[in-house]
Length: 372
Ligand code: NDP
Image (cartoon, rainbow, N blue to C red; front, side, top):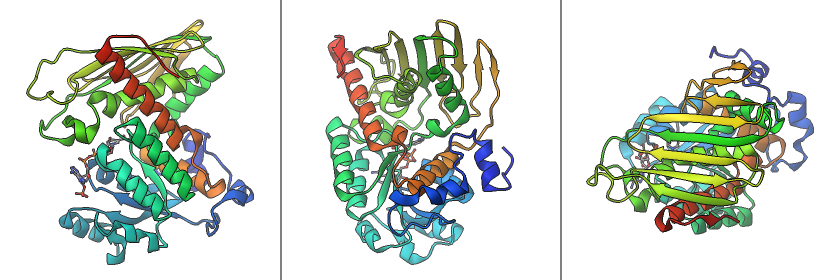
């Protein structure tokens, strides 16, 4: 995508869904947190955990966004603190470690704490950020258990701060278009969805392969995109689940988490969903079959470029940097309404956590389980 020359042009390029006019930014500000100045103010974001996603995607996005910027970092690795402070011109007072993190409460430059740590560490840092009085963004999956997710939603509510989950697809133009087409029934009633996301995982010692840190295997890491897609395509909540673990062909690697899992969800409107996630198959697809046609995205969930087609013809939409449009959209919402967009808030993350855990339960028991 070429660099947009203005904020308005940028919003037009991302498909209009977050195209709030500058006038509306000010007019709708009655719920904004006191102290926010929507007249061009940029929200300060503190990244917690400077791993691959923070470095290669979120920090890159924060250099492109018009309404937020990298204000602080939290890291346990002193060499990263040096490297990032030079690269992003960060003063020492904006650099924290995991021990002194709580003093971020006193940092007026930080509006949002963005937790980009291994999954099992999300809860602790979301709770500490909420206690510090900061809005919180948390990466997916939001937690490693349903109870932790409930505690995170409750803590943020009690502290009066917003909690968001890094569900970037909701801001991506192809995804937004298929949601629109399905809501408006342009291809009729959705009857069947096939959704797959898998990749070949590398380093066998990494935290993603340890259950206590990851909460599970590919289902938690990438299958969550498929669960999300099933919900945003149907616009409904599933009523039942069945699931099956795939074979373990490399027991030395997959001794702690599943190698692959398939699952089926039934929706109240009559749609059924077949999902698959794997750490040993390179696959990424969303296929929607409906009474009057079909839709397909493939790639559907990675950083893209996302490609789409339908029974009505190819989908031609702008290719965007997902993390940039996500952060821009979230900060627009915080600046205008003071609330996180509903499709990526803590409650939305909690709904997914309940389904993910039910998939594991169904795979272990071999039974069809109701979802409430
Ligand atoms: P990495 O392993 O690359 O980075 C995690 C970082 O967390 C480390 O670099 C380290 O940062 C910090 N950390 C603190 N304690 C530990 C520990 N005990 N073990 C490992 N790391 C530790 O992970 P990713 O960046 O790939 O993933 C982080 C989160 O982001 C996960 O929840 C993941 O699911 C999510 N994610 C989301 C994506 C999306 O598209 N939405 C894509 C990729 C990941 P430091 O050295 O600074 O302390």
